[in-house]
Image 1 (cartoon, one colour):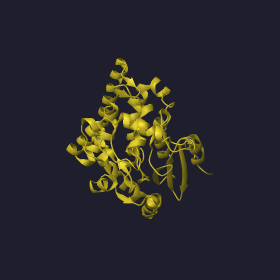
Image 2 (tube, one colour; image 1 turned 120 degrees about the horizontal axis):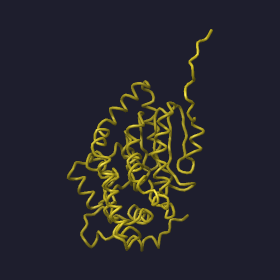
Image 3 (cartoon, rainbow, N blue to C red; image 1 turned 90 degrees about the vertical axis):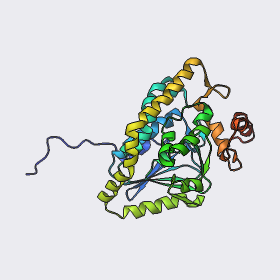
Image 4 (cartoon, rainbow, N blue to C red; image 1 turned 60 degrees about the vertical axis):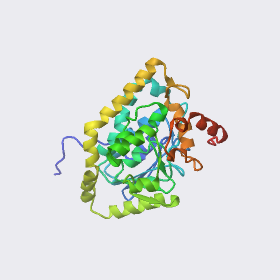
Amino acid sequence: MEKKPLVPYVQLPGFDEYKEWFKDYFDMRREDGILEVTMKTGEHPMNWSGGAHRAMSQLTRVISLDHENEILIWTHKGPHWMQDSDPNGWGRYGEERFQHQYFDDTNLIKNMIFDLEIPTIAAMQGPGFHWDSAILCDITICSDDTKFDDPHLHYGLVPGDGMGLLLQHLLGTKRGNYYMYTSRQFTAQQALDMGWVSEVVPKEQVLDRAWELARMIKSVPYETRCITSYLAKRPLEKMYVEDLKLHTVNEQLATMIKVAQGELGDYSKGQKDEAYHGLYARWKYAKETDHMLQPQNLETWDIHQMAVDWDKKNPKGY
């Protein structure tokens, strides 16, 4: 007679079920254990919002519970990374600011490293903000037109959500501090030279190259891949245990002070609300704009009116 356990294993949701859960924020497809996750907002490229902010950490945790996900490719819908913000997507974020900034800010960074114990590959098909999820992947492939910056100080924010910490860790303290303070951009080639990304390829080849690398890594035994992934993530794990919560809490502290002072809001306020960040991002990442690649002074660093004027002439089209 077959011997059975007293109770069966817990039945967690399968791929088709959680794919449906996250369908508004991510497209997902899986082939031979390789999971491709594409960030989006509905049928559009990702428009950053409170919902997207929370969904990223929720998704990575759910992905980690499904052992049929053996390699992750993390990418973005369309020919660029996220470049806009949903102006109406921040109401609940404001109501739950503590949870979003204390828990979610930490978790959307932490879960990429501590939960995803599989090889991860980012495919950046163009420039955009909140590149942290791409840089957190074990391998980062970017297009030759990609530009990077940490825009927090431009918005009157503390660069404490993990982006500044990555700059210090990967570029060195002095250079990382410079890019935090100035919000200056650097190009894809500079990123490669500084060790910020793994490969730079032509725009139309980015996703294909990510799949090529994923299939190559998939040819290695499963156990070897997983253990190698742990070693790849170990330097970031040590850094985050020491400093991530410190950084996120200090950004939250500065924001709460400005909320209390009535200085969090639109373009005229000392600290710009998340709802307005997309306007600056689309201007800074536009193909014809190289303003922030240059060293800045007091006059040129005041980009707010330049971005507003550009946005009026270049509506996003949907």
